[in-house]
Length: 126
Ligand SMILES: [Zn+2]
Image (cartoon, rainbow, N blue to C red; front, side, top):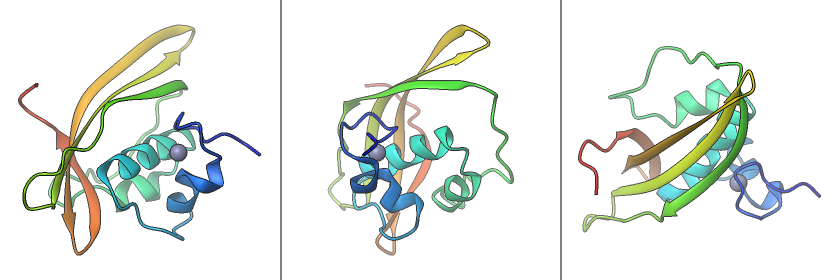
């Protein structure tokens, strides 16, 4: 039994592994965000590209040689009235050659055909 790398406290097979393997599709922006963090940890470029909105998707993903330390979701998905937009505010920490860094982002997600996609960091902070 391994705890999921996204720090949810759940077992990986009950958490992000279901999404990374393609058995299930995330049903909330938070599930997608967590599984994308897990994809960064496991360097799963295919999953990251597949869950990136075609509007903002990069052509390729290069992984920095870093060690991921943890994920902290500060604010759960706020679904807008349409139900097809959501935000997740999170902090992710990682280390590169012994030096610690943190990323804080309020990510914006949209739903299309019942699938959630990552679009970008939200422009305005709140
Ligand atoms: Zn997880």
